[in-house]
Image 1 (cartoon, rainbow, N blue to C red):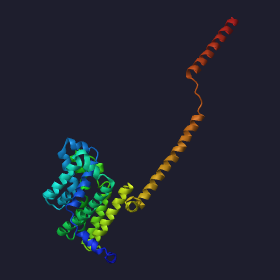
Image 2: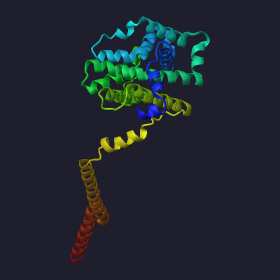
Image 3: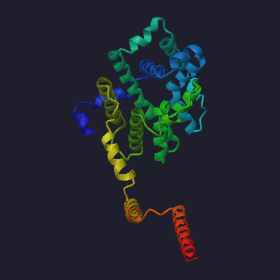
Length: 320
């Protein structure tokens, strides 16, 4: 890119592309990932009750992306764990975060300045993981853009995508926390990175690989630091997501509008029909007379009949 060359950032992008992730950046990734696990509800108690389940969950947090991408490419699931050095380093980190005397490691790493540095280093590893997944898929399926995006996304955000399985290891079942139902910021930014690197690998995006690596890494690090300093969890793409959702997926089509209008008309007609019937019933109720008790009527007629018979009897006696 000419702009990066003018700003003398070409050498910086080459230097970033040649940086080794082991051991410092990988260790930062392990520390931040295991700290995120420890801050889950009930995990600290689990670490005392079942250290093995806690260790296995920690390994899924650390190597979940590699495991998921291996499953997608039909490779051995245990292949990511074949690097004994990485597994040993992650296991040592797990032990220090959970069982260090006086909780010294966790308390130090939880300090904001140090946590900012560790989180920034973890975001750098995200770039390498996404790019590694895209290249790995490109070597097997060089014409499939979708496969490259899926594998790059899985390798960069696999820990979040398999979170339901990881929760099962801890005896927790929360299907509502599925990342596909409600994506977190790391999952979204990883998906965007997978799309960008896949487009670059297929030459649809006119950028050199090391230039794109620099741009993507700087964006993720700066934005993550901003979110941590401001205490905000709102995605920077929230406005764009809302606009796209309202435009394409909210259901405001001509058919939906017609259906709503028909339903509203039916409801109005029902209200109109109910109103006259109510009035008629009220009028009928007002025009009714109180009925005379049949018992009272019968007693009155009998009394009149008796009086007439008594009168006739008296009149006949007078004649006699």
